[in-house]
Length: 117
Image 1: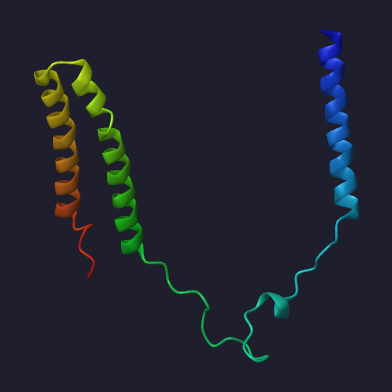
Image 2 (image 1 turned 180 degrees about the vertical axis):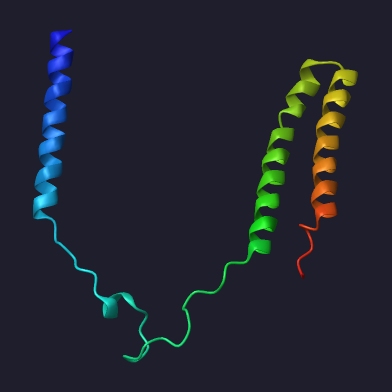
């Protein structure tokens, strides 16, 4: 037990020493306003270089991700078909697909699938 504790302490000391040495030897950078601004022939930019974030695109991407994961959860139903009866398989499959359809209807009803607003 003593060897394990002393080994852990030695590893902790070596890693702490390496972090301190790398912090001391690292190149320090100073933030300069001109270097961090976008390049426009030496003039201040007239508008923001970033476009505004589209919340509608984010919602569509999130809905796609949720339904993609739920489709991946449907794949194990094939193995349930091999191990159980047909009635049990259809009960589970119809329950899961009805949850998906209710979620899709809710998103459609809320207007999250409307691209132009």
